[in-house]
Image 1 (tube, rainbow, N blue to C red):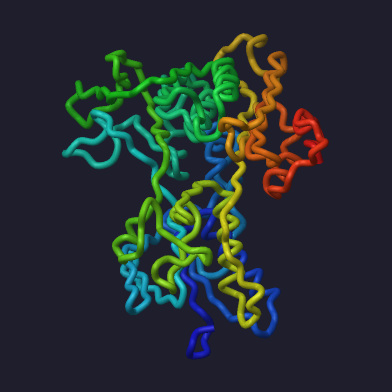
Image 2: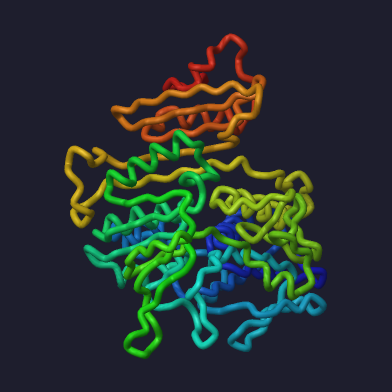
Length: 441
């Protein structure tokens, strides 16, 4: 409760997973609290006009499997204002000033501003006399990005996806589902370098290629070629590689990673490194302002994953509603993040791949911890070429420190629990047993 006895005004900037989860947990904690639980009111400011949604599932919307409404998050309680952008934080008077001229007071402010797509330095991407991206060129981060891209793709459309990380792989797979002729260009040595090892990446590549996606690794894109023959703003005609080769393209998706949105915090004078710096109570350098989700940097680490955003929101909600019961206050000590991805089997619009070459079903993928071993680590691997399955775990001393599973996730539950608990492995358990269905549990 505020010092004058009124309810504490909590303002959340950001209508994504982190912001919505926080609003939900604040309401739940307040409803189940005791008499000493402080009264709170929550106002959520969301820049997008769409109802809050699960960003992880944008690929399913692009593929045409789900409508936008299907991936909506459960409604956030409290006052939710859509299509409102916070433009300035007045820390002295504890006010948030918005682009529509409104002013929102706060007792506690939570920044859940997320991240922006990284736009690579490509020739033709931006020109001084133009605003935004050239026609045919799309980022893939928001629902508006997804809907704009979806409106342009047709069976046979020539599409180039630049970037072979989690987002690029999802976009390439979705475009193939829509019948596009897809080329995936990855500058790095292999796909999904942050999550997979070389063997897992090669298996993923084979799956993508069997679905009709043409994959190029160690492939640097130099620029975009625009068709300006009609005198107006140029439309994408090709993607030019560093070696001078040109890929004809009607659509290009920029999937080159994301960067935390820190401009609002930086302008307010908060400490910002790669992200908005927070402590174990998720406080910024201003004790009345917190940060969670993709924009937050905790312990020199950026997570950029939904699991971490949810854990941070839950911890902050417990702290903000702790009241006089000090034991309820939560400290956030980090997230042991597990990445999961399911690439569904091709539907009717997909490229004409011979049935014997197509995967029989979806490709499931999971990766956690350190997948690249250090000298002295033990590594156990199982590969089933017939079924297109691969499993690997890395053990350091008596601890499971990481793993990769593709095609067969029957052991992921037990492996994830063993890794998250960080308990010593039984000395008599053969390491190979970690990859059996019970995961050594």
